[in-house]
Structure formats: structure tokens, C-alpha cells
Length: 501
Image 1 (tube, one colour):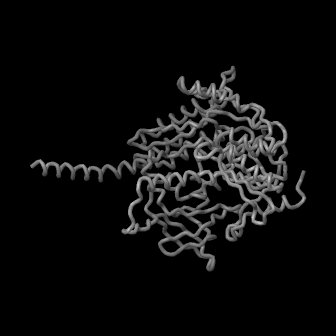
Image 2 (spheres, rainbow, N blue to C red):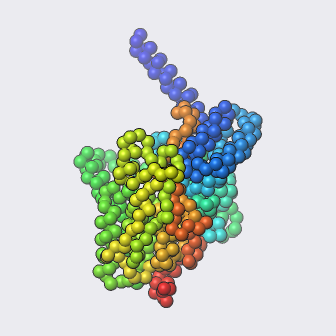
Image 3 (cartoon, rainbow, N blue to C red):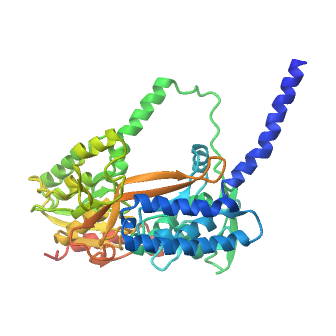
């Protein structure tokens, strides 16, 4: 009897899960009508409390007006048939706050579980690039249910939506657009459309791409779906714990190579130092300072006084690491920023332990107008063993935050030539420092992740806009097909020609 009851109980739980789980998953992609306006109000209040730009009376008034507009839009969506609002529609409505502050660090996106991210990792995602003339081009071959789309194929639509409109929607409130420069966000997010699409609209078993058939000029649809993992050989023994640990250590030992590397150009006429991040987390298994020291020692010992510094797709990180790089490239003292200040109540730390750590380790001090980050405002001296040759710095839309400060400082100090496209990071005012990730919403409903910076950075020689290179150049479809980097080509042309002084 007990076994029968246990069986019935187990079957009941399974049936209940089959009914409830899809409901919960569906709920994660929409906001209940009754929760929409309270959630919008929470976003406004959270930004107003933490964000340094929201502390002034004028900005608070502007945020109130932005909230009124967003609330009116939500009221219209609530009045429409149905009892919920899609997460994308909600984010598009709340984006008025981000547009008001023009801060690329300020982001709002669905909060996804580890299980969701793991499932999404196995998805076959097209690798694309948005060219200068807004063509979305495949940069690698893409297997589909019909055939393999070759590199260079132009994608026209994604799940029925024209790519230009879709990219515009998916980049809203997604960051990388300081001073309202949305082109930067569009280019960077176009590289991972499948990820961003599902993050906003929910997981899909398959996605449809509409592409251009070059031979006929017609369009055709193809479905892309899950990757099918290779079946393990039954004769293979599972790896032991020690083997797994050894493999993990080998991977960790090489992790930094993805973010900092030194090599010679194909024609050996110049060095190329690639720095993809300044974040300490990227160098937790290596010493960033030692890596830089070794790199510049190798450059100087070679006697080759030509260097390309590649800061493309460098999203920033620790300001101290960024400043260390500059010290190897200049020959006089400098400051990266004129001031780093915050009027946010949380800038000085939350709790006694954090306050003490920020006071001692970061030099945070309370002054009349708010908190100041003392160490960031100090004058830095050039390295004795630094590079003193010809320098070209590559930047693009993914050059953001601390890497923007590097490019800006080198530009103001007239060190080298900047080549590439406009950066996503601003040159008038930057926000950053401690980024607070705040989870909003109930666990059994849609949860949103709001990322808010608490510090205001005033770059050296601040001017409105973003960093504009001396030579503006972008990828074309032909460049992608031929695996040619026009930035590298132009950089070598400058270094091997009459280098401007």
C-alpha cells in the first residue's frame, strides 16, 4: 500500500512539474501587468539612489519626467489584451532612464539562471559582424538544417525580423553607448545576435535566418539549432579527478594569453601588443605587471622601435592596470583623469569592513561635495624601461571604460597615432568604478539585473563625445572575406612611412 501511495505521490509531483515548470519559464519572459509599474518605479529609485549623475536636482527632475513618459507607455501596454508585458517591451520602455543619463555602464537585462546559461552555451550561434555600410556578414561558416552558409553570406533577417531593426531593439539598455553613441552598441551586439535575442525573447529550440543568395539575388530561409555533441567513445575511461585538476590548471595557466599577447607583424616590421582587458579577474592566474614588464623588455631588446597597441574590444577593467600600461608608453608624468568623484551614498562602502578597505586600499575620502578616489588622481611617472619608438593605437566600438581612458590619455599627450573607429567609451564624462549588480523582481516571476556604476570619472582634457581616431577605418565585406584587417594594414603603412611627429 505504501509503495502505491509513494508511486502516486511521485507521479503527482512529476505531473505538477510538467504543468508548473513551463508556466514559470514562460513567466520569466514577461512582466505581469500588476507588477510592471511598481518594477519601473523600483528601477527609477535604484538609479536615483546609486548613480552619481542622478544626484543633482536637475537630473532628478529629468528622471522624474522620464519616469512619467515610461509610465504612460506602460499604461497603454497594460490596457492591451492580455495580463502581462513582454520583457523586451518592458526594457524598451524603461530605456528612457539610460538615454537620459547616456551612461554605457548602466544596463538592464533579464537575470538568467546558471542552468539557462549552460543550456544556451551549447547553442549553435552565428558569428557575424556589422560592416561600415550596415551589412550583417557571417565571419565563419554556419551549418544549418539545409546546408552550410559560407563566410561572407549576408544575413537579412533573424526569426522574421529585419536585422537592422532587431539590432536596434536588442542594444537598448545594453551598455557600451556613452554619450548616446549607439553605433558602438549596435556593432558589438551584432556579433552575438542569437544570444541577445534569446536573452530578451526567451530560449528557442531553433532560430531562422534569412540570407541573401549571391548568385541569384534572391532570399532564402534556413534554421539553426542546437549543437549535437560528439558521442564519447565507449572504450574511453572517464578522466580521473587528478587528470581533471591537471587539465584545469593547464587551462588556467594560459588564460591570460587571451587578454594580453605580444607578437611580430607578419612582415616582422613592427611589434603588436594586444591588450583585451584590464580586469584583475582575467589575470588571476598570472601577474599582469610582470607580463607587461616582460613584453616591453622583449620589445626594447629587439631594437625594433615600431609598435602597434591593439585596444580593440577591450571593455576596460582595473584603472591601475590601465595606468601601468600608459607608464610604459609616455616619457613624462601624467594623470589619467582630472578628478574621480561620487555623490552616491554607497561610494564610500557598505558596512564597516568595506568602508575600511576602500579608505585604506583605494584612498577613498569624504569631502564636502562627496567622495573622492584619491589614488586615481595621483600623478604617475613613466617607466624607466618604457617604449620610446613609433606607436600606433588601434581602437574600435568595443574600446570602453578604462581602455577609453588609455586611448584618451595617449591622444591628449600626443603619443602615437590612433587608428580605427570611434570608441564606445566617452571623453566628456565616464561613469564606472564599483559596478553594483542589483537583482530586481520576485524569484517566481521575471527578475531583472540592473547594473549601476557609482563613480564619475572626468578624463584628462575632457571634451564631449567619444574618442575619435586620427585615421577612421572599418571592416568591409571584402576585408572579412579575405581575412584582412584594414586597421593592421593602415597601422603598418603609417609605421613604415613618414611617421608623424
